[in-house]
Image 1 (cartoon, rainbow, N blue to C red):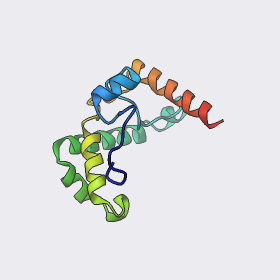
Image 2 (cartoon, rainbow, N blue to C red):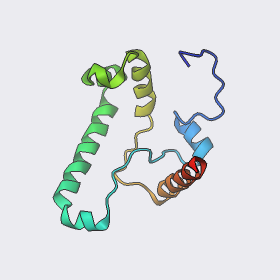
Image 3 (cartoon, rainbow, N blue to C red):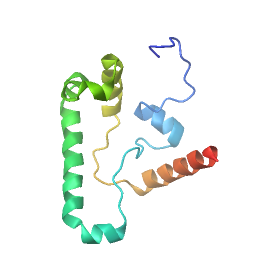
Image 4 (cartoon, helix red, strand yellow):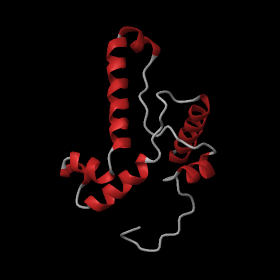
Length: 122
């Protein structure tokens, strides 16, 4: 939007209403931790630590401003446009789930999205 000005969005999934409009759910499992049952059986402690780390990061993000979050990141992470990165963080924080598991509905929507994306790449 900053680079090209008056962008006309056909679908905007940066907000919960937009997510509901496009995917039919208020949250989308865009970033998740996944593991096979076999791995989980042999690495329960590691899986628990990963879960706790992700939950702690999301809690931090909910409790701090987008600018505070950006300040914790190395400049190499956000590149030349700190403002755009901060704005994106501000939008993304509002989409963070408070649940520590993906619901069956969100799983279904995520899988449908992956199937469409995979089909379009072929």
